[in-house]
Image (cartoon, rainbow, N blue to C red; front, side):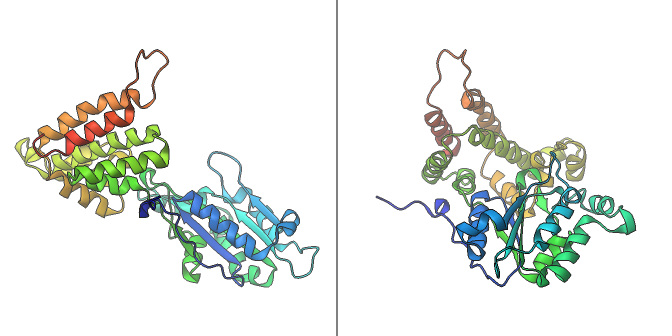
Length: 322
């Protein structure tokens, strides 16, 4: 039996310091975040102690706010356990306050501080963690799951995030699945590696529709990069700045010039040089069949092998004589 590729192995967890009363876990690898959360809880509580001494707090609503649960959170951490020397452990699941975006970070910060006295709930929580939590027999775990494609990222200026950064307890868990290496190989026209990584990705997701949607999304970005990097704009009297300002989609995940970190944009610009404009348009048109069968309909009289269909598309796209 062969080992799994490195991209699919379970990442090692950092050590847990039982003296540390505060952790902030973030990133897009939800499974790793949950494993480390469990490791922190295990370091402080036995299974028998958890029922009375462990709480998970989830703020209500589709846009959960810290102010809705701040009182409950601090009260739980200040509660004294019935058992001597047993800690009180509390996990705070994601609240909107911890996130920011490139375009709205400064505005969100101003809105957040518009409360009484110019203070925000994050200011109050950071002060509680810094001044009171060290004197309590409590442990706080804050969690913020991120989605880089949709610009859901923690704000480094948030007081709680900034405090975690200063204390060295801001722990990131990044998803390193085969899809990232797959697109590198695909755009490098490395057929064999791209096929192998596609199969790894298929095994990891069970052939989920998101694989096909990701293909379409990345192809759109690559076509944008080809348009911006070639002589197409100049021939039409359009500057690159105008193209970025007036012709790009409003959604950040569909806009080449809004991609973060910036190296993602640079990588696409370099990859675009490997293809002609005609090749990209032709390959994009051929993706229609993959999109159609990503979620088959009951009315479809015949559904081809999606994985085989995708591998044929990959082979055609990466062939240098396409």
